[in-house]
Image (tube, rainbow, N blue to C red; front, side, top):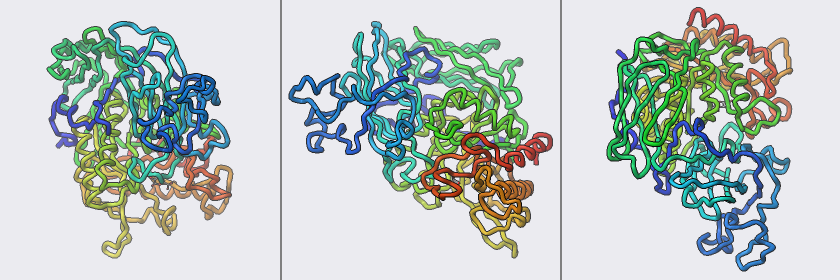
Length: 620
Ligand code: GCB
C-alpha cells in the first residue's frame, strides 16, 4: 500500500518540534520572503579581515561586554574623533569595497584560501513607517554570522546555507542606518558540516540581503500543498500581537478552492478543501504553477505553487500516482566559470538546470550537499526538474554531541520551511556517507522524524554506504544499513571501478542485493576526467575515455540492480575542492564533472545523455 510519511500530526504540532536557535530566540520563517517587496541591501559593502577575531572579543581578548572596542560599534572615522573608546586598528568605512552577495575567496588573491572572520559594513537610508515591523533577512552567510544594526547586536546565526531573519524594528532609525556583519567561515568538529568536506568553503554572505517591512501582525508561514488524501491543504502561522483569532484566506488563481481559516491562540491556522476537477498537476513534463495568495489582516503574501503527489508503493516511486524513474545528475551550487564565487543568479540557475534537463535528458537533480539557494529551487519548479534537497550532515559529524544535533535540526527545519511550497522537491535527505554507529543511527533517525513532522507529503532519504562480501561464491554489493527502516527511499553512492579494484568490464556482472524492499537511488556514481586529456585505449584514469567507459559499464550494471528507481551521477561539472591537489589532473578541482568548470563537455556527457534518452522512452 501507499506508505511514506504517514504521521498525521497537524501543522500546529509540527511547528512546536522545531528547536529554537542556540540563543533561544524563536525563529522567524518569513516564508516566500523572496516574493515580498523589500529594500535590497546587496551591492557595495566595505570589508575588513579579522584573523584573530579581535572584533568579537574585548580588551586583550576578554569578554566583549567589558569593552567598547567591537568593530560593530565603530562610527565613520572613529579614529579621527580620537575618543576614549576609539579603535585604531580598524576602520571599516575605509576598507576595500566589495559587491555582495559573493564569497571573499574571489574578492582578492590574498583571500583565496582565507578561512576565518571577515567584517562587512554598509550604510543605507530608510523611511520608517509607523506601525510596521522591519525584518532583516539573509539568504545565507557561511558559516557563522554576527549581525549589528547601528552598533547594537540584533542576532547571530550558524549554518552556511539556510536563511535567517531578525526583527530590527527597534534598532532602525529614520534616515541613515549602519549595518555591520561579521562572518566566520571557520568550522569546528562540532559543526555541520565538520571542517573537512570534499568541496570548497566559500566564506562570506553568498545570498541576498534584504530589509522587508511587514504589518505589525504578518503571515510568517504558509504552506499550500496537494496531499495524498486528495485534498488541498493549507496551514501556517501568523506572527504579531494580533495573531490570535484572525481570519486567513487562501486563493489559488484559476481554481475554485474554498480555503478559509481562523488562527488559534498561538497564531496557527489551517484549512483544507477537496481537489478541484480542473487542477493541472505539476510534473517535469508540464511544470504548471499557480498564483497563490494568502491574506490575513493587513498582510498579503503571494507565491507560485505547483500541486502534485509523491509516494512510495513497495519499491516503486509514484509521481501523481504513476511510477517514475529518476534520470538525474548531482549539482554543487557553483555557477559556470573559472572562478566561481557561489552567488547564484537566476541566469546561473537556469544554465545549470537546463544542462540537466535538455543537455542530459534528465528529470531530476540532486542539489548536493547542502540547501541550495531558493533561486535554484524556484528555477527547478519553473523548468520542471524533480529535486533531492539535503543538509550537510556529511561524513564524520560529531554524532554524539547534542549541540551538533540541535544545529542539524535547526538547519533541517530552516530548509524545509523555506522550500516546502516547491513542487519540484520530492526528497529530503538527512545525511551523506555517514559511517554506521549507534550515535549516528540515533542522530539520523531524529532528523528523519523531524522531516515527517515538518512535511509528511514528501519522501525521506539518505545517501548510505554499502559493503562488499561473497554471497553464494559471488562478489556481491550488500545494502543493509540499519537506518533504512527509518527512510522511504534508500540511496547509495556507488564508485565501483573508480574507488575499487574492479575492472570496468566486470561491472555489469557485479551482484547487488538489499535487505529491504524499498526504492533505491544511486545518489552518486562517477569517475574523474580532465577535460581535453585523452587516452584512446581508455585505460588511464583521468582520461575522458576512461570516464566514458566507466559510465557505459556502470549504466549496464544499473539496469540489473534490484529496486533501482533512479540515479544522480556525480556530477554535472567540475567543482573546487581543497583536497584535490593532483598537480596535473586536479589543480584544486574535483574532476568528476561531465563538464569542466567552464562548461566544456567531456565524452561521458553524451554517454549518459544517450542512455537517458532511451530510458525516457523505456525506463529500466
Ligand atoms: C562522495 C561524496 C562526494 C565526493 C565524491 C568524490 O561519495 O559524497 O561529496 O565529492 O564522493 O568525488 O569522491
